[in-house]
Amino acid sequence: MLERNRERNLGATGHRRDRNFERNSPAIETHATDWDATGWRTFYDERAAIAEHDGGLNRKRAERVAYETTIAEWCHLHPPNDDPDRCAACGSPIPLARGEWRPLSDNATVHYGGRWGLGCFRAHGANRRNEAIAALDLLDLTMPPELKV
Image (cartoon, rainbow, N blue to C red; front, top):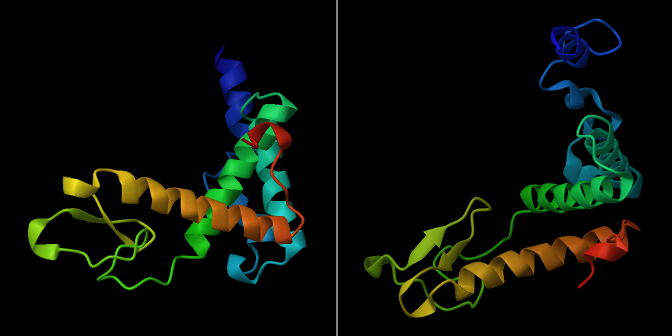
């Protein structure tokens, strides 16, 4: 058991794996917003290989995980350009005094709670996901068929 863990941690080279080893990947050499279709394909392929090899997933599942990771990366690197005083989902003004809003990690602000419930929060997430899917599709990185609804 100890030998297997040592092998997994050190890899074939015998050197300890750095948690940031992926930073040396070809896709990460340039700022990701400058990536072309090849850069995004490399990012996706590397994530699929990591999920399959290191994560022990079958290829189909690894590709699903890689695609979801690529969507998240695209959203992270392409934040919305929204007015912080308006809901990023519905466009209505944000009532700051009532606290029925949330700032999100992508710098958007959405209604949250009160009469809006989770509607705007969910809609913004779905909108961002659809933007990423459309952008990746333009780069010939299409959604795996089993993810299509």
